[in-house]
Image (cartoon, rainbow, N blue to C red):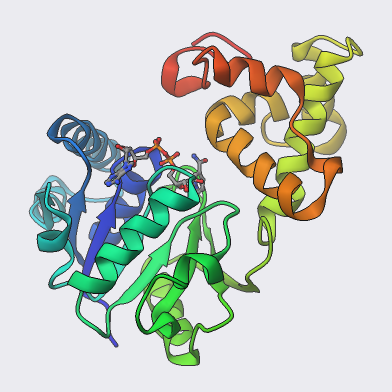
Length: 282
Ligand SMILES: NC(=O)c1ccc[n+]([C@@H]2O[C@H](COP(=O)([O-])OP(=O)(O)OC[C@H]3O[C@@H](n4cnc5c(N)ncnc54)[C@H](O)[C@@H]3O)[C@@H](O)[C@H]2O)c1
């Protein structure tokens, strides 16, 4: 299977970035979301990424124009996936929502289309359980922002076939990114390590051990983090960080229980950069 037509479901922070890198690599992209206003926001993000690419001389204005014409948008999911070689789901980190989407894709996408989830922590095997031919389901875990981050984790569910993994690796290669392959396991590779680090930083804040600035400064200067853990949590989205933490807690135990401030900020709708406030104000 050579991937040329990609459908991205969910046009939020990750979906729009994945769509952008896919179109820049020469593939056609169909974007789908629940409401036109969400699609418009996603397309606006993509337009900004293109302008940025042109400003930084990564592409000429003519190339930018060409890339822009590779996008289509759809509100109807069945129509959006009907010609897809690869579907990448990037909606909320919620198993029920993801299963409903994969169920629809199973019915409407071509029977040999690859069906991928960008989930941060949820089980690919469980998502695949609602799909006919689960051997074509896998995780394609991009990092934020997809336009800058070089890694994609390729996740093999219990029933994922070798052919699916090979096609996925070829797609990642086309994006000029680096793939690592991991078995389906809570948090896969990066988040299994990173989520507890972010959560532990919030625990330090909750326990009054240091100020948020000092916690961030400590990890930047003492552990060579490119950005402090609390700032990184704001960037990732505190809702995404909390959902990831809860999955790890459920599957790996209470060492992963989310810290109180993380839960409180999400309850208050303070989700980080995307809402203008998290641990910091933006
Ligand atoms: N934010 C990160 O740093 C990051 C990194 C890697 C992976 N992820 C994962 O990517 C996924 C998306 O995260 P995000 O940060 O882009 O979220 P987001 O909240 O920015 O975007 C989610 C989008 O999905 C859309 N959506 C929800 N239900 C839908 C449905 N039924 N049909 C169509 N669209 C629907 C929403 O309208 C929204 O536009 C999650 O699974 C998350 O765990 C996030």
